[in-house]
Length: 154
Image (cartoon, rainbow, N blue to C red; front, side):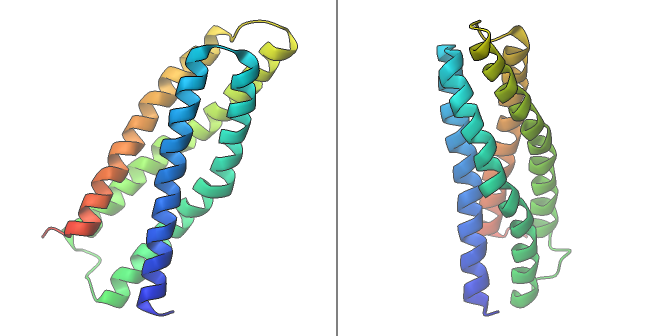
């Protein structure tokens, strides 16, 4: 593939990864704080879908396209910015994996609350706290990766 095409795919997939994450976080947090089980159940169902449709493919595509770009550009894989970016990407993925699991549980808890005509259970709120914390870890890791990709510091 041509360098420009691979770079376009890399930038597009990073935009989808970051945009899906920040959009999902914004809506899920604010809808959850309303504590309306029906709205939460609907939203979390879509957040789970968005992760499978957008986040999961980009988590795979980002390192593949990134390493291929570095190869095409002639950057040594031992370049500090590549090593640190790779480590930060690993941190983001390690933070994201339990988030996916929690989102599925949160979806189910919200749906159960709707079916039982009850408020969201305490477990939902515990998951939301941890989900938010892990989301912040992934967010800041990705922001740092963007800086490293643009600046390529020695």
